[in-house]
Image (cartoon, rainbow, N blue to C red; front, side, top):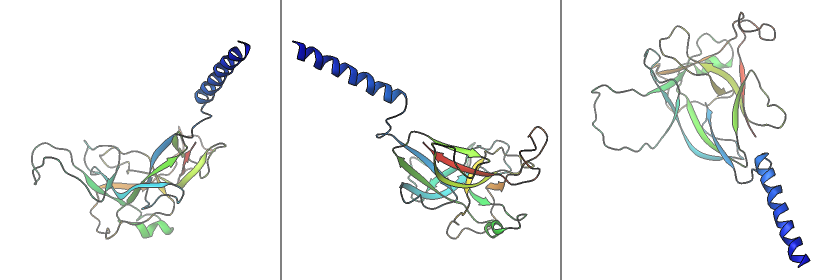
Length: 211
């Protein structure tokens, strides 16, 4: 009788300990997360490539534009369709780096189309982009670092801040100045933004980290 009771108590205690670990985020062995690596065709070697494709988005001149860029597959599938531009519909274009005012190595990328890779990270529960950081905070693992990019302020279309890899790739055959969704580097503007620590006109970096 005593051994049965001891076994029952042990079972209950083990279940309590397991629940505490799960609620505290200590056991993420079965978890996985997906993130997009903007500006690259491949993932880190330790991660699984879901697909490699091209960045797409709305036209920078469109005031009704969708804000977020998309990582489009190279092998799209279709449902019911009618070819030709007709009716009241949203639009999807490609994306380009806009670097004609940049003096460093980024200038080489001007007007080139932007690739992307969707990556699967196992044994992680969250991925976060940290602006203004090249490295991750303690307890986080760096997936990639880069430069913060967004649309140009004078353009009509809204945009979103995106972390583009610091050593980006070029989409194959994609330099034609056709515009579309445009990526400009982001620089700090002092005022409501505190300077220091930020610096007027300095380009901002970013880091994508997992935990």
